[in-house]
Length: 95
Image (tube, rainbow, N blue to C red):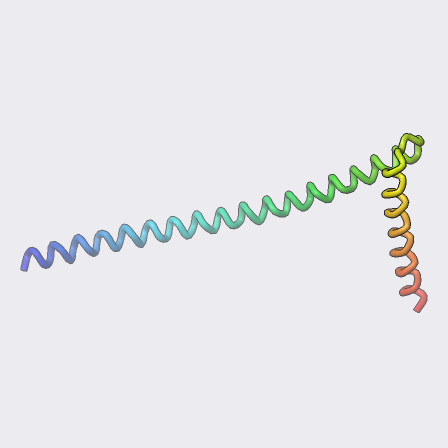
């Protein structure tokens, strides 16, 4: 009987150890998920910042006349797209 009780005790200890490890890994996983979410948000913000800065560079180049022909075409397309969006907004407001 002592051998059986000893085996049960050892099995119980291993189960407790596995449970502790499982709980630890769950907490660590949740922390990592939060970190990933925070990094994704930061990445999106940085991407928006880069886009705004690129637009500013484009505007500055246009204003001082140093824009190359392909850049001018891209810039004109962007301006035309903005104008279309503004026209849509004005149309919606006038309804």
